[in-house]
Length: 100
Image (cartoon, rainbow, N blue to C red):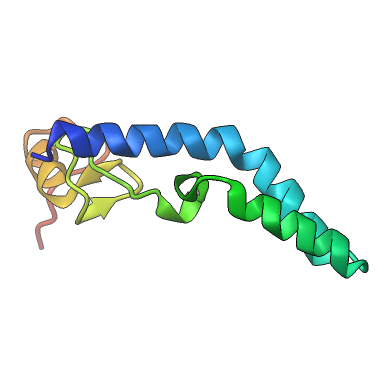
């Protein structure tokens, strides 16, 4: 299992991303569409002043049960290990072990 501090850090990052999402998109739009270089420069400066962790790229998917960052299956929100255990136990609707 992942350390509780790592899980908490991801939650904190997600909140930060949500808080600054509108401001980031507005500044990026100004930078991309502005014909005035001074205005674009000021928007870029403001964008740099936003915290690094407000960038959605810094988010990482984690298993909802264990917090494992690797082997994540998006459709279920679980790591491959938890997915296999839950599927074998019949806890995931519509999923069954393949046999041929």
